[in-house]
Image (cartoon, one colour):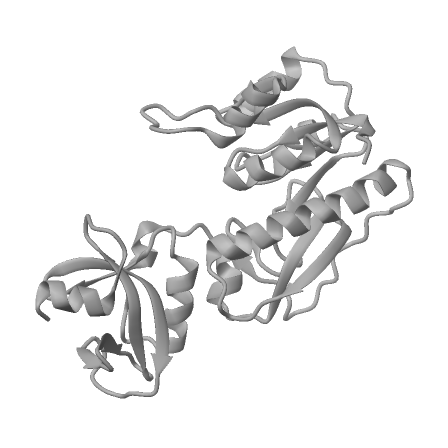
Length: 301
């Protein structure tokens, strides 16, 4: 496929933005990328900067709303349209108005469901049967802009956050290439989000404290948390004074006092408020992932 002739500007910072940018660069002429700078004392790569350096794309770095506006005051951009994915800085109306066709945000939920910071994690936490991607024209109100297009995918309630993220990145890429050329050619008119009393929901930023397992909750809810938090903040507890992160479980129909660990078919299990969790894999503090059978053997539980 030939690259789309019109140039675009790209806003993005995180790993999802980096994966998306790599694909966009093969299909669009990217005039410039605006991202966050590498944090002080940051160890390791900065994904978006790595890609812009590799592809030799002109890059500007903004640490906050004020420094972002300074970029537009001191530079001239030709692009009529910008695409924003996984950026993390508030965009002012002044910058939105800079682009005659606006800024298009690829948001990883079916809006107005899971507006906010972490829609992928909350799709898993809520146990819903489907999610998807929405292409939204950015406004200053959080995820309330009109939609250009959207598409759903089914969930089978086994997805972890990394697996679902990868699926949604691929869906986003396909939706962008399907939609943006038509929008540039005035073949799409953005439509207001369909709002009802029941379909608006908000995700929030996950914190480190969210990873503490509370066995006074039902096993079904905890199983979703373990899949959702598998990368960060991880689902943590203490077994025989040993800090562990539990990474893979199965719900079993056993009842007992919540928080009590027990053996079940030569594996470790724990009672919850409703039913129990059979622990298939875990990561002891400062060690590699292992089965709960190996953990019990090594620690004589």
